Image 1 (cartoon, rainbow, N blue to C red):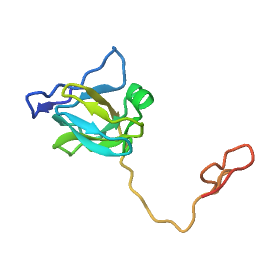
Image 2 (cartoon, helix red, strand yellow):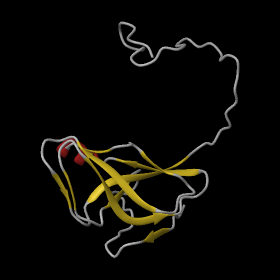
Image 3 (cartoon, rainbow, N blue to C red):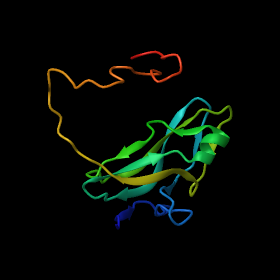
Length: 148
């Protein structure tokens, strides 16, 4: 599969995989941004994508930035729909204790392109019964956990 990428900024770079077979391709910043602790900022990548119908782009945090600096994608994963043709921008949150400085060219997130299903939804009077039933958050814990 080939995905057309429009470079919208002189500093923009194509998404890039560090190793053959990697699922995620690095996204790079095109601007300087400082993210204070406990705050979020939108960071421009300077690219637009033409993701094919039936696929979506999912923007994930880079594990090293998350572990070492507490930098996370706020709406993880960020979603790029097939019909979107605007600039890819990444909303990052600094959960660390120090300001985090981003420079042009820095790898800020990773993009995974994935096939998606688009089912139709129908209203029904009741759902089929399952062993789990309506057990929600923590319901599979050792002591039964909480529900809902």
